Structures are given as C-alpha cells and as structure tokens.
Length: 216
Image 1 (spheres, rainbow, N blue to C red):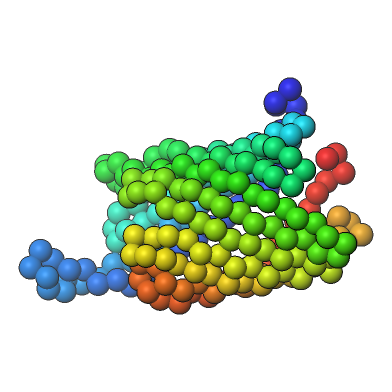
Image 2 (cartoon, helix red, strand yellow):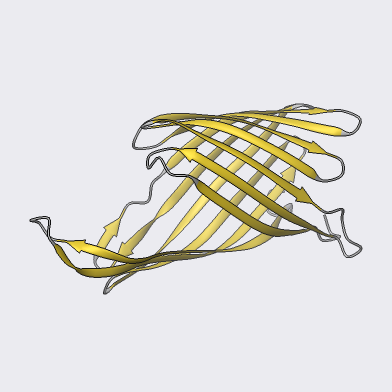
C-alpha cells in the first residue's frame, strides 16, 4: 500500500538573509533601508514501489520584509519511473501552496519539471546524464548535465541550462565517504556557476550526511 511503504526520509532547514537593502521611492530617490529574510522548515517523505518511486517535501515558510512579517506553506511533489535498467523518467511539481505577507497574498513560483536520466556503469566508475524541461510563468527552459562517479567516492559534474538572458553553466566536484559502521555517509560538494540573469559568478559549498535506517 502507498502509505505503508512511505517513510520520513529527512528534515530540512533553509535560510536566506539579504542584509540591508536600500528603499527607493516613486521618484527614484533613496528612502531609508530595510532587511529581507526568509526561512523554511521542511519534512521530506518518500516511498518506493517496484519500478516506481515518489516523494514529497512539505515546508512551513516564514519571512520578514522590513516591518512586515509573513508565513505560509508549500509542497513539492515528485516521482520517478524506471523504464529500463539504465533509463529513468521523472516528473516534479514545485511550490504548491501559498504565502501571506501581512494581509497580502503572494503567489509562489509554481513550476513543472520533466526529464530523463541515463546511468552507465563500468567496472570502477559510473556515468550519469540528465536532460530536463522546466515550465513556469516566465517560459520553458532546458537543462542538460552529467556526472562522473568513481567507486572511491570522487565526483565530477558539469551542466548547462537556458535562462531568459541566454545560457548558464556550472561545474562542480564532490566526495562521498564509504558507509560508516553506524550506517551514515558523509558528503562534501562544491559548485561554480557562471552566466545567468545577473552575469555573476556563484560559488556553493555544502556538507551533508545520509543515513539509511535498517527498516529499509
């Protein structure tokens, strides 16, 4: 049954702080400053059913914009179908829900994503490739990327995607430790992104821990 095969897969916490931003009035002149902050606490659910798997990310949203406070709920839904041993098809619906800032309702950027993934396995390495299509209120965009993984845990990644202003590219690397004696796997990742709407370079670092309980 879909409920008896669904488990809590994780918890999430995200936070964004813009720092002090200038206020601009209707005539284009500076008019003080304000802070913009957002945070989200989430619960991740997922289940596997033979060649089909599905998941959900439930989030409680909180934010402040100057003297105004807001809150809301959002949900992401996704599923993966295994079409063959090396081929998967995925579908995701992102940002279902709503957000309210004081008495003003704010629409979340709803998106639909669909894509295919290919996994090629060799004796000592794996190669993964993905092609995604994303549709939102702005338009339709495409993403293509690949990842090399050797069996020692080292990873290399590269990708390119379309944006309103043209193309955005990214490069990345990462490392995963072997499973520890208590079942955990540590992950360390770095990525570099260039191009995009602002034409700026973005560096990202993240550290993670995956833990798979025995009841799986």
